[in-house]
Length: 82
Image (tube, rainbow, N blue to C red; front, side, top):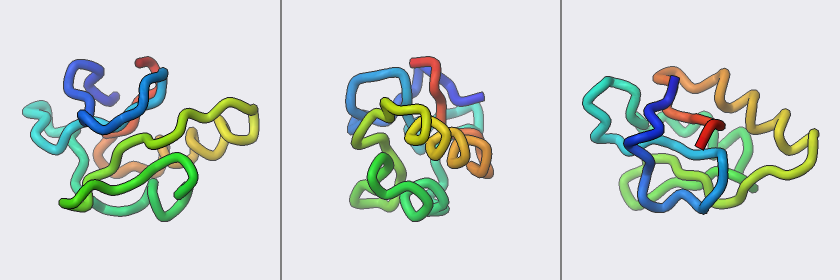
């Protein structure tokens, strides 16, 4: 599960977030591009390729799409409990 205490500083406010790549628990973003390639309306990459949430999902379809990215993340760096 993503560490809610180590959110990427560029996440927009809301319950969905990506963790900072410097998360010491090993759940920080590794810049794999899965989320921002799979749901570019909601996830973006910073200058180092690390993901952050640029828009919060609102509709059931949008939430479902973001949930798919959460489940596909290889290091569990996406959270929805923020």
